Image (cartoon, rainbow, N blue to C red; front, side, top):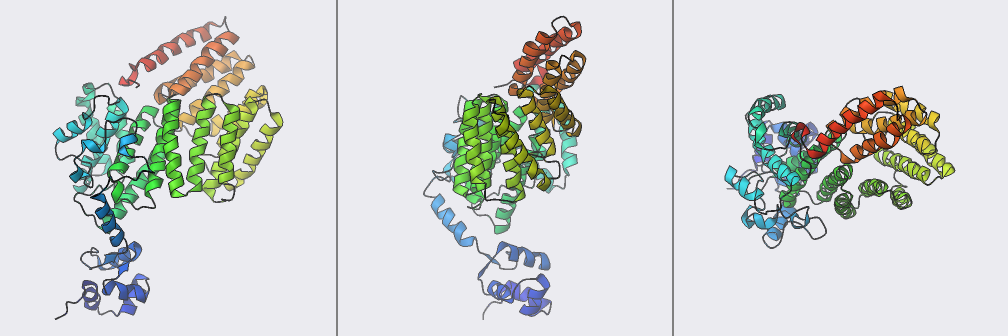
Length: 511
């Protein structure tokens, strides 16, 4: 006797024909026929049917179109490393602290969450030259995986954070890292329904959930980038890279390089603000390779934009312009919102470098072209918006010694910047203070500098700290050598910045 297909039984239990079911779930009759004859159907179709019958795809006997690919991946996994040579692998990341050799081959496709604390310690002490950021990243990955058990017990995010506030009071003395803020930011960035499945096989739903969770995590981390401290962001980025590596063979082939590029770009961006230009360039090179693997013009252009920032940080305006123009050529034919936003950001960065070279006309041409794109970018956005344009226009005017014009632009930028975007706000305020100083307006310059100091301390970005410290010594004191208020503030700022640099403030020790 032939066994009735589970989907057929579920359909007949509701007295539906294949056509009626197709209409109810808004799928084609061919899809229903294929499903009932053990033919593969898309993930979207399976979700529609599961939602309609309130059953899992296994209960309905549905076959995924990804099953063949997954079985092929699992067959290859037994023969080779889980990461292809073209993409960054655990063996060539920042340090050998977390390498495949440290994990038995039988565990390459299972959860990153250790079965016991001892295994976590073994993993983290596999090499003797583990950096502080990598230790933080590995522990954060382990902690995030354990938090998943609380979600299973119906804890809300607020419940978990409230519990962490209490528990962390008892562990503040365990290391010099500011774990309280780190875990608060890490929970927001990493606990976005990320599922790292246990076992050698995962269902299509688990694979979808894994990819969606990692994608949401990376997107959330980029939003945090503008408000969190750079050491916290580096730990989060390292954690995400580790999670991507551990779930490499379980990710869809077309999204895998996108995740690598996103994580490596975030590492490169944070290392840039930490003043680690060589390490930033290494991470961005890996992001560029992943972008090429994905054949994704926007990702390639985004990576080149960060490479341009690194080059700009090394005071290489001519080289920076070459990188910018290369990125602009890559995205020239793309007119979606994100490509236009990236193009505008590249144009303004180009304008700032033209100004550094004293090219007034070229500076204005790039600024004008970027300004025309603002009509397609009407809202505030972390990557680029009207405030970004005002900031860049102010920077260009400052470099070209048009100080009154610079003040006008920068005042508008400061007024419109959201308070929580501390990174952009601190950078804008430094330029704002410089404009007042060069116009010999001591009172206003000092007031802006006083607003800037707490932001510089909270962000813990050595690049901005160095820029701010140079401004205080080379500009503020030099312009007002007999102003006692300025002298007193510079001493106060020096003490705060010295605490920051030695890691005593907030318990942070930079690597």
